Image 1 (cartoon, rainbow, N blue to C red):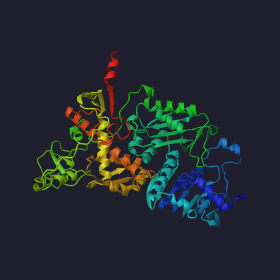
Image 2: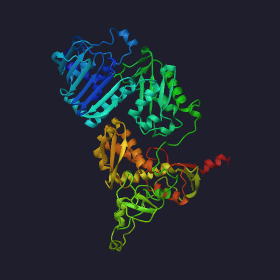
Image 3: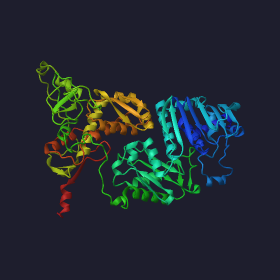
Image 4: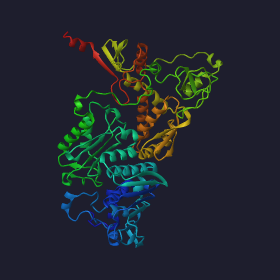
Length: 638
């Protein structure tokens, strides 16, 4: 049996650091909280190598004397509390005195600090050991420089993700801090490139929140936020209404006494308010502030003080539910609201139902083959001028494609998939070969009970068929979503994705943290046909797209924004591929309230028959419902 012994200071320090710091973002969070607690009005953050090489924070707060600077890196040293009872009246972010001690144990740390009118001091620590303390310039505030993070804990380095992903996590921490502390300005520089310059917000709080939300969440999301303040728990709600929902939960922020926290109670209350007006793949973006008595909640249930527990979880759930309902729906309760369809951008938004026949007739958007003499990049169809290009010399709008051959006006320019162009360009001799026997018809799936007789369309959303079992209802959007999903997924898995290069790259604006996440997947996305590059900290350039797609510029922007919100280093390639393909299928499928003909309905049913799972859309919703003859008979008492 091993003897009990006391750990040496170095080992104990590294273990303590592991409880507080998992990655560079944990370091930044602790240092930002210290800067805000010190009364900083502006904070500058410099990052290199995703935070592993350098994290430097300079604040203009109250600073420290040489004596306090030396004491600040000791274990359990803090200026926030003096006894246990102080925890019930705590109004600062940090209090345990472990942040600087823990960071110093796993890095090469240098600190410079000075109080107003005081003497500047510099402290250097490597791996928890003080190397030197010396005089420094008398500049009010504190600068903390962290280099070679985890240099003495190689096992921790092994579990860090790519530099792009770690930068995304660092920027997420800055975004949370900036939304929590509106009166503080932030400047963020990553590898010499300025990512954020957020000015301190003054004046009326609602306008200050919306102004900062515009800089962090983006203009589109911020402009769609509904806002309302409540006396209960000091609640301030900023949330997107049902027609402005987004594709991810990443744009959800909860602050208790300005501390960013995670709470299942709050999240479940918000989703309860939206339960009748939200599709499964859409989520509310929100910023929720509350001011509570420190004794009414506990943030010390997790080493990083991220999770929170309320003294009365039931009362908090009810208050959030009511506040969100009042903010979004006014005096009506969520149950009284009319259920709305998925808030998904349409692929062809000009005329409902236009080109529906072309979309349904095959498991991919049908594109007429170009003549053999064509460059194979455009199909010219008599019709409305789209503004992409004109043979009469007008400017080409900077939204897509490459070239177009002349034809009679007016014309519409559509991208043509290279795989179909190549087939159309085969020499005539190839067409005279001995015909090959047609492949055997695949066996019908278990759910197939033909023959099917088309009866009509219900609310221009559900297709009604009759078969030997009774009445069959098909959700036209979910059904074609499944058809397109399997077609696109098959092409991606077989690496049969033909790529179309764009003369004018499409500029897409996203949040800097989402841009970093997206670029961390850039090599994989290039294999999938999307060549992305960086234009600025928050602007991504789309240089190519899969030729099977026919997205217009606005639809491509909406797709990339949605994609930037779902990427994560924790996803596997297969997870991201399925999620991306499902999103593509959703945006390209026909929508509810699109009028389709009987022939188109029959063709969609035939395409469903060929699917591996024709009964469910990619998100798991059923595509088909059956009302049996027995059920119908019961309705009439037979």
